[in-house]
Length: 332
Image 1 (cartoon, rainbow, N blue to C red):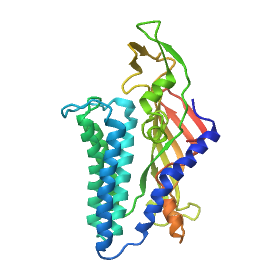
Image 2 (spheres, rainbow, N blue to C red):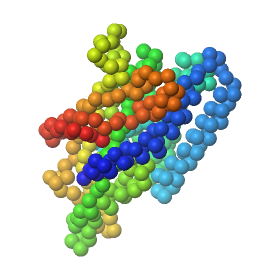
Image 3 (cartoon, rainbow, N blue to C red):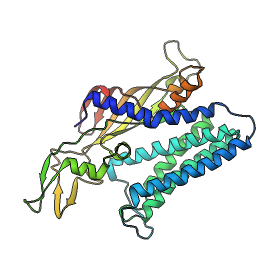
């Protein structure tokens, strides 16, 4: 069940202020790029980057791994999990990690080629660290398919810089922050035991705003956004430089990684596949590349940079693996 449009707009505003705009404000420092290495900026970035990395990994460990059993390093094949929505999320994260790192390195005055490769390496370092955590967790394991998605994401950044010296194809994310009903289910092995869909969703996706943004794969859509005007030597007057086309991927009715079966309080539960079919969604929607909107204001440039991390709501055409074609006047 999706939230009413007013509630979804509220969540969108919270996302902009809590996640996007602060990153954009930080990005305004990238606008000024010296021609040679600025040792003060390089030192600031080195200390700040190391502190951010260590602090981020510590927070991640406490949020996702601390309360799960740990064991010796091992591998886990999750290539078919979550209908690959999580893999699309890895592409998004690795791409934007590399891009932000590149911009930060260019801010220090580092030459373009070196900054590109270090940006690629930074994105891979961040995402690989998460995979190492997974490798020691009994709940998960090191995933080669996740690593492949990470390479695709960081590689998409590096390839575009090498080919075009700009990002003509960008990766964005959106979420509808849906609410889940308290639909009761009876255990398949004991009619005296019950569980409900809301509790199951909270157990899987968390209850905090940040956890739901990252982990609710039913609500999350990952987008590949293309700016057609960037590919044209002479842009027609009718085609705005900032107008883009977004191709999205999402999925529905996922209440488990591989299937909709789980255990809770000594009971086993399984959702009816007719009532809760797991299926994929492919989406087509207009998009805005905010970084191509002309402005002389450094503050607006900063905000536009941050806004490009998310896909804003827009009319959307949906094709899904149930054979349906749906039109959404506004899709989050």
